[in-house]
Length: 105
Image (tube, rainbow, N blue to C red; front, side, top):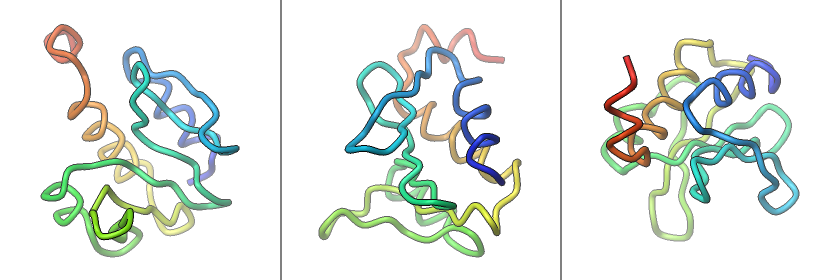
């Protein structure tokens, strides 16, 4: 996956925008960061602990913020579109208000 492909997937989600996050591109729902292109070829996706642990393996490793599990780190060179799309969708679903989730097919 390329960063442009990630950007297209993220921005296709309802009301997701791109904004700077400490000098890096992030994808947000409102003010909440869903994912960040952290370094070349690396995407951090903010997930709950159970979702992060379920996704771990292959291109996906756990993302720790200090001692707190905050999501997953995706190696884009080893990831495919379906995986990245599912992870972004999960991050969006966790944070989307009911009105947006209701309208999602």
